[in-house]
Length: 81
Image 1 (cartoon, rainbow, N blue to C red):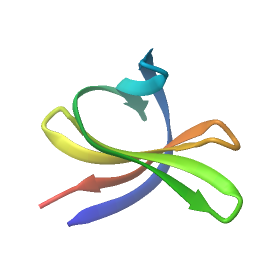
Image 2: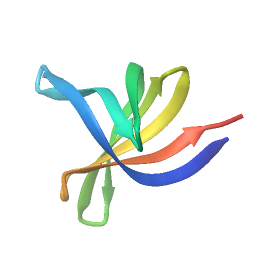
Image 3: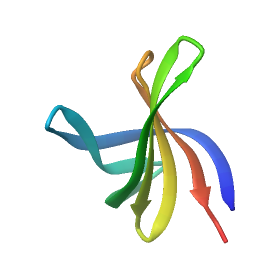
């Protein structure tokens, strides 16, 4: 099941074929390297456009979000068993 986090993160990535690909993110004092992107999806929250990613980093599954209006990144959830 997912554990809700909703904390700010910093993301580093690259642009390839006009799409952003996250490569690592920093949460608290940890740098987590993304080994796989399992899902990316555009969503609309009222008038706010967001981009969601499900990523695998350090053998854990994370959901991260980019708010296109505020240009802020956020860690939404972590999969815990």
